[in-house]
Every structure is written in C-alpha cells, then in structure tokens.
Amino acid sequence: LNLRIPVLGLVIQVFQEPLAADYDQSQHISFKEALVLGGALAFDAIAAGFGAAVLKLPVFPTAASVVLASFLFISQGLKTGVKIASSAKKGSYLDWLPGTMLILIGLLKIFF
Image (cartoon, rainbow, N blue to C red; front, top):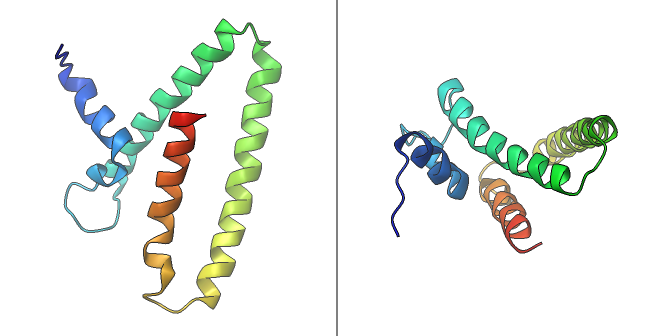
C-alpha cells in the first residue's frame, strides 16, 4: 500500500529525519526551515491531543500541565545548554550531542 499526500510528505519526512528540514545543507536551520520543523512537531502534538481525548482527560488541566511542563523543560534545557556550551571547546562532543538527543527522544516516543 502506497499512500501519498504531497503536502504531508515533507512534514512526515522532516519528522522522521529532522535534518531534512535543512534544505540548503548549511547545518543551521533558517526561519523558514524552522517553520517546517515546527509543523512536523505540531503533528506530534495533535496525536498526543487525540490520545488525551480518547482517554477522556480533562481539557484545561491537561493543557495547563503541558504548557507548564514545556516551559520548565525548555527553560532548564536552555540553562543547561548555555552552561555546557560555555565550558566546552569548539569541535568537541557538542557537535553530535543535540542530534543524538533528538534521536533518543524519537526512539522513546516510538517505543514508549
């Protein structure tokens, strides 16, 4: 079975391989590329929302907990990233650490 939806094809490809959003192969994601990557991640949020609805979780407490957890994790991630980046040498493990973390997060989402 081969189902093709051209508009979603790119988003699914980006979701499976985040580096596919880097169209110009610059190793930096531009604003336009970030929008495509954000769209792919939004599909993940839609799936999570669907799952919450199936479980009949209350809408507002669930949404509030997601916002709070996202804020806390992003804030802590930024603080930790700045701290690590300021103490690490250029060209060290920081080159592959973010990609490895994304892969691990993806695997956790797939299997758990």
